[in-house]
Each structure stands twice: as structure tokens, then as C-alpha cells.
Length: 64
Image (cartoon, rainbow, N blue to C red; front, top):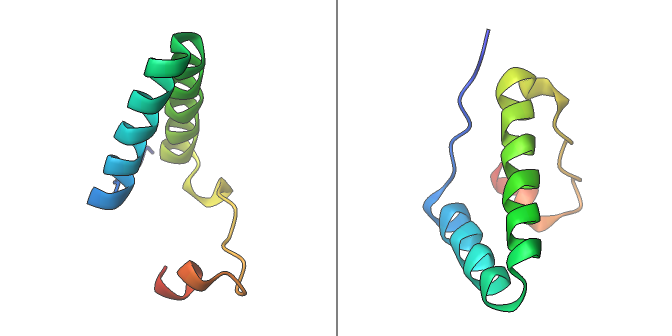
């Protein structure tokens, strides 16, 4: 069974901004980051329970 990973609009914008930032400064790093993020998303789609659980002391985890 496979699942789908969905990004919030903010997360999508952050990833696009990261890609643009890296592409301007180091295209190889941009390609590496894109591949690493793609692999992580693929892993989560196949094994959704393998993700790290948020730390309760981290403020954003209260909204998770």
C-alpha cells in the first residue's frame, strides 16, 4: 500500500524558495537537495510511520 504526502502551501513555498536560493549559488547543491527531498518523500509515501515524531517541546508540534 502506498500513501500520498501532501505539503502545506507554506511548506511548498519554502521548498521552492530553497531550490531557487541553492540554484543561484550552487546548482549541484540544488540538485542534491532536490534528490534528497524527493527520496525522503518517497520513503514517507511507502512507510508513513517511519517519520520522526515531533518533540513536544517544539512549538510547532502543538499544531501537528
